Amino acid sequence: MVAVKRVAVIGAGPAGAITIDALAKERAFDIIRVFDRREAPGGCWINDTKAPPLISDFAGLAARTADAPAPVPTKLPAQSPKSTRPRYSESSVYPYLETNVHNLAMEFSQEPFPAEKSAWSTTMHGPDTPFRSWHQVQNYIRGLVERNGYDDLVSYNTTVERVEKIGNEWKVTLRKEGNARDYWWVEWFDAVVVASGHYSVPYIPAIDGLEQFEKSRPGSVIHSKHYRGRDYFRGKKVVVVGASVSAADIAYDLTDTAVSPVYAVVNGHTANVYFGDEAFNHPRISRQPSIARIEGRTVHFNDGHAVKGVDSIIFGTGFSWTLPFLPDVPVRNNRVPELYLHVVYQRDPTLLFIGAVGAGLTFKIFEWQAVLAARLLAGRATLPSLAEQQRWEADRISKRGDGPKFTLVYPDFEDYFETVRALAGPGENGLGRQLPPFQREWFKAFLDGHEKRKFMWERLNQKARERQDGTSGNRDAEARAKL
Image (cartoon, rainbow, N blue to C red; front, side, top):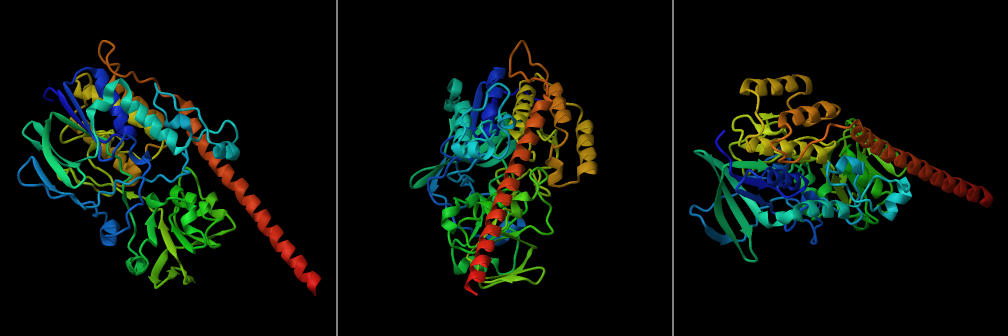
């Protein structure tokens, strides 16, 4: 590897924030530049101040091709009319959103997570609740980026539109949004770290009649990332699609505001490995199989059942991996192939990824990956042979498959953390972030947090059933009294 003195980091969310610190503490680089398309640090934890955009390009979202590369001006630097191309940079935050994993699993090793707890979380889970408001997560990330003058390294409202290798250098084409026009320019680097996340571009499956349903009533189809709270759906008949945690949270959240029941498309679909499907057992949630087609406002399900007069359909169906700025790096089966340890691009070790993993101890994984990337770029860690890197990927494909499960570290957290820590090594002369040994308490806390969530749903579902039975009993008694 050639000497690396100039490093670009794409993204200032949790993965980018810890990457900045890992790079800076190596004290090996002349230039560290960070680019983020939002106005502040935080990534998907930033609160949006304006309404989310309406969904379009249903075909592209279903085919996972919606986030296409943007055309670049032929001569740079340049100015251009303000871009109207969707970049899916809006967040998934709604006003009362809380984390759904234990805070211990979300904190970096040297930066304790804030201890403040919301009244709602304390009521639901007790005074030792491990969950936190989205405000605290955003402030936590902001604090990481703004310490030690790191904020000076970041260019906000800046989208990385193209990254390409020219000789031994990386040419990074950038677009900064202005009030009326966009400004384009190029910067050059020795290495690029991609920490842009993969929870931006919604996946919405192809369903006959879905786009017409949205066209006839704009705003009637949304993805979970555009959910902004239960009040909008008050008195509306709603179908929620998805069997994982976002769909569960939303369907449950709507039980007291939407028309009862809330129809949840979960039957025949695999429940989330961490949270199960208890949330969908609420008496005001009607479990349904997949949608066969939509005609007008009637939703037809695969079992022949149909629901008329549907007002809204909410998709909690996950996201698509997209890298529109890296046209030479393919995305296959919703993952980025040829990443050794999910970090190092095998074809070029000066291109590294932080956060190319599935959910689970993610903030901590970002830290371990960031330290490894920083050590490698500083020349203080050595990669195994390309053949060994390829063998690691082939072995993993044989065990996990060549799809999203490839990126899921669970349940092998300890093995992964210790492998990355060993490869990163202790650094040189005390330079760089130091990684502690893996603690099984982290994994236990992670699992305990999920059990708290499941117990909450079980408890609240039972209360809801008791209320419903009591109401039915009272109605029966009133009917008998009238006879």
